[in-house]
Each structure stands twice: as C-alpha cells, then as structure tokens.
Length: 338
Image 1: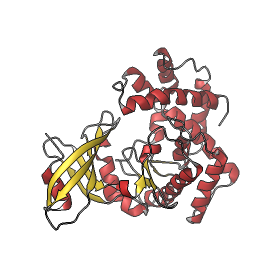
Image 2: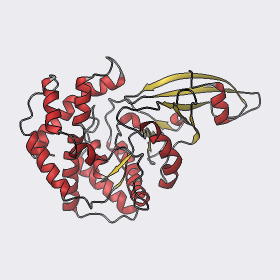
Image 3: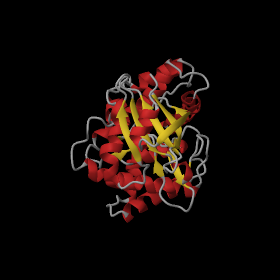
C-alpha cells in the first residue's frame, strides 16, 4: 500500500493541500526511506513548498524497537534537549502495513547537506562539535533524571561483551574482506578489562551515526548544525560519538587536527556549564572509546560480509569504504596508536 498519500499530507499540513509530488532521496541501510514531497495548495493559501517524509518499516531484524526509535526521539526527547531541529508536522503509523511515518520540515533552504565523500573543514567540524556538545550536555541531564528507556539503541556494552568479536573478525577475514588480525584477541581482552573498571563513567545520549549526510550545516554564519537521522540514538559515554567522528567511512576527518577538535569540543561543554575532566582523564576515556567504537563495528562488518547490500546501493558504497577504514583502525589500535 502506498503510504505517502494526499490524505497523509493533509493530516500533517491541513486540508488546503491539493496536490503532492514525492521523490525518493535516500534508501537507508535500515528498513527506511526518505522522501522530499512537493506541495501545491488551494488558491490564496500559504504553506511550505516541500516537506521531508521518512517512512520506517515496523519490523527490524534483531532490533525490537527499531521501527519506533526515531518517532520516540522526536516526540518525547528532542523537545527536552534544546537542539536545533526540524519542525515535526506529524508522527503516524500506517494501519495496514505498520509502517511508521515522520513528516518534517525540509531544511534545504537554510542548511547545506554534503555528500558522503565530503571532507570536513575545520569550521564545519566545529559546527558539528557545537551540536554534539549540546546533545551530550543536555542528554546527560535527561538520562540521569530517569532510567534509560528501553527503546534506545542497544547499549554498546551488550554488543561488545556478549559477542565473540575476535571470532566475527576472523570470519570477515575468511570472506576475503580483511587480511589477518593477529593482535585482535589481545586488543579485545584489554578493552573488556578496561570497561570493567569504567561502569561509573558519565552516560549521555548518543547520536551514534553522524557522517556528512547526517548533519545540516547553516548556509549563513557559523551557527549550530542540525543532527538528523536518529534511528540509532542510544546511550553511553560522550566520547563514543567523538570516536566515530574520527572513524569515518569516506575519511571525512582526514583534514582535521584531532587534538584541536577534541579540545574545542570540551571547551564547548565548559561553556554550557559542564564539569570538564582533566586532560589526562579526557585522553584515557577517549582512548577507550576509540577501541570500543572500532570493536563495536565488527559485528556489523561481519553481517555485511556474509550478506552484502545490493550492488550500487548507498549502504553498499558505504561499506565498500568502511571495510578498509575499519581494518586500518583495528590494526592501529592493536599497535597502541590513536
């Protein structure tokens, strides 16, 4: 059944919508699609020329809350965070298919979206880090006012500690995606040992998946970027989002000075009134987060190696790049390098 209908857009924007035209702009790795819908109104009626409609499948393999997560976030959590965000016109569920639907503001007029291969400039990275700082600062307050809700993306500890990460990596090697990783067992063991001593580290909300297409940059000035695509919103130490910033599938971070960017992030957290760890503590926590993030991605690499995405699809192109980037990071981390 067609989910994007005139009736849906009328419920979101009013009965003066008389015609719609939809174009698909993204088919995600998860069971979701993003569409831009152009709108025509009755005479003498004003409204947005276009909106973004995201359709999200009801059932996600191995992720019972996957279909609901982004709706929960926009409806229940986003208003508490003070983040720049698109206006949400409607959250809905198609009665016949169970498909979830988000109708949101189209940010294209005021913001720029880059292609996956884009290389961040220092200015653009700071824009992202300002958004991260606000998310992590307010996310800490939101999470610590109540237990983490069940709909959040499964905690990183679950995937890391309950899976045979070295065994999964060896399976990726056997599939011809990687060459041997002889030091991975030791890297995994020491990381698990370190995690056992950090259970009291501050936990906040995490985006978990920012790369160039998932951040809207202001067209004018150097304001705060808008983080989009919250399908993987979860909880954990803020350093995990920072770790992924430097583990990009298309090496978008390669022109950035890592230490300069991390210092800028913590400076932004200080401006928001947060207590900042010492430099040594920041380095120790980031070193652990870098290892956790890389190892955390091994089960995904294993899944994709066994069941590749369709040739030519955006997820396929993403992982064709990510296999090499992740392998290089695992090798470097096993050597004790950042």
